[in-house]
Amino acid sequence: MMKLIIAIVHKRDQEKVMDALSASGHRFTNIATTGGFLHDGNTTLLIGCEHDAVDEIVGIIKQTCSTREQYVTQPISGAYEGGNITMPPLKLSVGGAVIFVVDVERFESA
Image 1: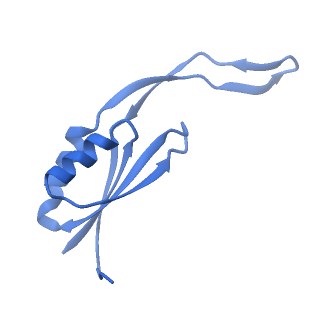
Image 2: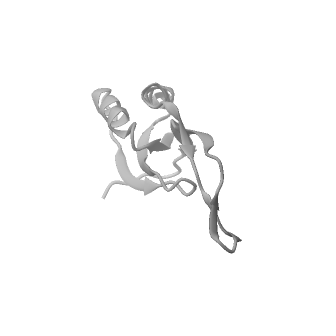
């Protein structure tokens, strides 16, 4: 059965992932996307494949994406009459990839 892999990859890792997938002979469509929490740039990859290629593709994505730590500061608006208060920086783990693998019931090329 055909599978669709949807991989959301951080913008810093997108070239490595796409180069590795291409070098391995896997085709994909990439879409520029933005994360909702940090409003950071991402690339969403759509990869159609046979069931037996899923583990290889997921492995390539995991090998070429890395997580990193990032500090984020966010003001609390309206906290007092004088203006905004800035909270201490918050350390977050960002990057890597979020990967979904779904069954494809039907595939057509037009």
